[in-house]
Length: 520
Image 1: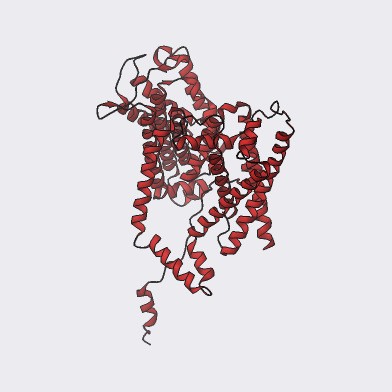
Image 2: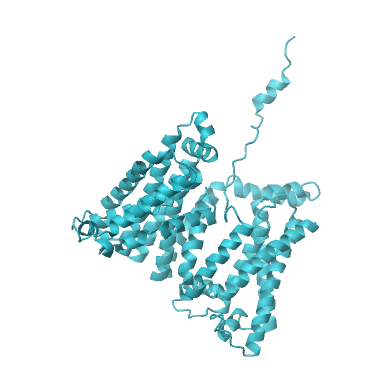
């Protein structure tokens, strides 16, 4: 029990430090503004209403509660509640201490914006929800505690079978209630619940972009494009184990194919969006295949260096004066036309968000099918030990080339949509740092799974856009994130899990064979 409490307090302190950091860079205010815009308030101002800051604090508590139980599946309900409360109180204490310090600044009229630009007196009052300091601190602690308990409750619902095992001996009536609820959720109404969930998600996907406004649609559209890029690189790095550093070159191929075929200058071909997008995907895949043929026997750092060189060669060629008449040179290509759908332009910010969401769904579907297929198992074997995989009969060169081609095709898809949405593409957009960003997002989110890629894309591409007003803190945020990741989540925010193999269940035929005596 003491070990459980100690671990929970350690988790709470870790998340408390993260929450203190978020407040110091006004991340709570930015999320509050986002929640206000989602709820339909077009101009919430620089500081959101207290109810949105309360919602943010509850969400932070929810994060603490879920994280406190992330690797503790064999606990009783009482132990889970104890772990959640311990973690939330530890986190709330640190946040409360920060608010005490902020209260002292407010009461004594200490001006420290020279060092922390966001800590204005109005911001401090908003962080305390417009209440008196004592009440505001107590409300903060209560919100974190409530959010943590909600997280514990979600964990309990997600592991009903474990709860049933703990209670089935002594509390029969609770057992029956759990079994009944479990039957409703997982039994004959399972399909209905799935349909309802998918329908609600579809409604949210359709309605939310209409209320976000152009800025947030641009931000989350960028996140979606990096999700597609991350899924493609996850096939190459996360599944097949090939470290590729010049991945953004395939993105550039897709973007420039769209630009050259669907812009009035420099060639005025005007093929249209859909043929240009398809050709960009095909050319990116062929480029991945052609790049892979001479380098498939390279591994590790050597492979990374060669692919890094390929990415830089593509960028330098696009920027060179020799190809200016063909690619636009350093100026890039402008006025790239958007798609047409059913005879009407489909090129507003909302339309592109829908298009990007469709691309994310398509990429996720293809990625999931490949991961669960024989090809995916061959990639995993190559990643774990290429020599053993080859000795086991896996055609390693074939599957590595396939991974590189499919990953490049994903990048070509994202590049074509990106160029059309921005109506511009240029060589400086395809520098090495873009490849590093894509590689970083799958490392931060967790290699080898879709949720980790989505979370990594939001963390590394969504948050910097949200933090754009606080440019002085952007590098600080990245540094703190990397330190936090290395200390607490070295395998990523959502690490992939190895498949668990179990003994096959005994069938009625097997039991009948056991009952039949053998003739002597």
